Amino acid sequence: MVERTRNLHRPRIPMALPENSEICKIPAGWVERCASFDQQNFGRDAWPEWVWQQELKATDRSYFGVVCAPQPHQSQGALLAVAGISHGPDAELLTIGVDVRYRRRGIARELLEYMLAIPRAHAADRVFLEVRKADAGAQALYEAFGFEAIAVRKKYYSDDDAVVMRLEC
Image (cartoon, rainbow, N blue to C red; front, side):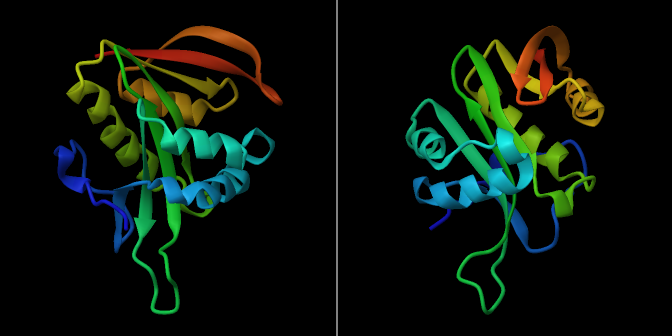
């Protein structure tokens, strides 16, 4: 059973989620589902199943996804996006990704806003993240939320450097 948690805060922007979809807490039993999503959307930089198993069991982080209601012939709805964030004074956006078929529709913006409410609710001082140096679109999204580039990590990804960004809460 997926825990529905859409109303933790009021969004600042109009809802961008597809019809019949919602932001849900990802249960620990979705290891294979998350690993498959990651592989399809991040390729060789995807987390393997064993990492997802550890991440979804960890108590110092939260994972949420955008999930569509299942069709009559499906047991589960489609997983459109996934995001994870660590807890603590220096929180970290661990991952955020949107299915390639649903990008450029505002889903990442809405999910990011939702995820940033978590460290703010826990009185975090800062939120950090790494983003591909070549991904100007993602960097612009993070900057729109107040993140600032503070460093570069060489060869962080298999084929790119990472820009480290920080948001002061």
